Image 1 (cartoon, rainbow, N blue to C red):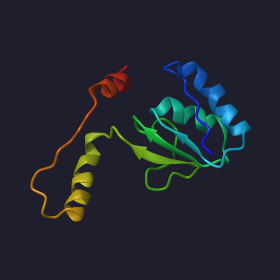
Image 2 (cartoon, rainbow, N blue to C red):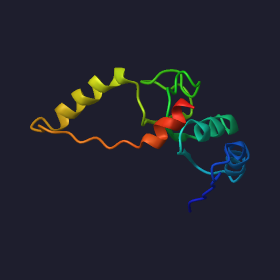
Image 3 (cartoon, rainbow, N blue to C red):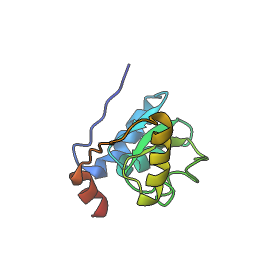
Length: 117
């Protein structure tokens, strides 16, 4: 069974929604939609595993101790990474698809605006 909760853009509701899911004893929390949902999930539990999407730097936000070893119940993927990670990503891509000559990148500029506000 999957228990869904939506904040509908009201980030102030994230903590109570996360607490409600923790109270229901879910096996894992999936926190999507950026840092507000991940922060709310982390504040709600230190024991239930959390898989999240990060808009900013999860280390700087206090979500994980380090990228390579999170050190807590939180893990996930950073979808808006600093440009310092791009060479590593393209290196991995080169290993996965060594014959690729052209790479397409999709980007949602609305997310970028939310990140800078």
